[in-house]
Image (cartoon, rainbow over the protein chains, first blue to last red):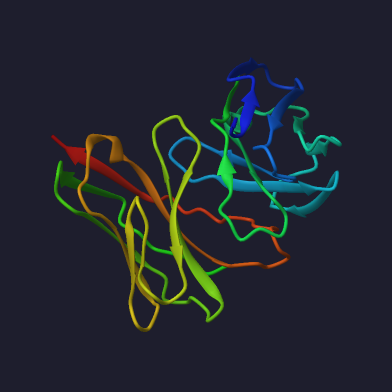
Length: 113
Length: 114
């Protein structure tokens, strides 16, 4: 049983560009959350998707957007990249209605030059 | 969600018990205490959670004080693979069923010494 998978593993972009990160949830999970983790900090919640809709959002600008597909996989899009967007982007999944813990993927390391 | 306070770093000798403290003095009655850990360059991994009773699983034990204002995560026989950042999080369980935003602090960097 594959856990949460994310692609790509690493990514380098320049300021002003746009980026798309991808996440496939653990089998049986239908809810996906995205987190941003800057160096030396704990993960910060960006948003959560369930039934292809954004259900909850953290304190992130509109440059950060997402999408969830019918197969429950998800994308995180970031427009007009800033140097400060350099971070590890983590995806976590859970089955809605479950009291179990969230499972996290290995993350995508984004570097903005 | 209530805020937590953890020491920035700790060391523990291999084979000894590692005791990681967490203060959550503003915790409310329906908030659970969760522990996650993050090994370098990996995603966070769930360890254990509890409400008011002590809990134990195959990874660790969780001791919550009677007033619930603090807790301790215990790794009974620490190994080098337990070197990681450990996060203590308090949150309401079951809020919107699965709508589980986790609020991470900076955690405790635990180093296991050979």
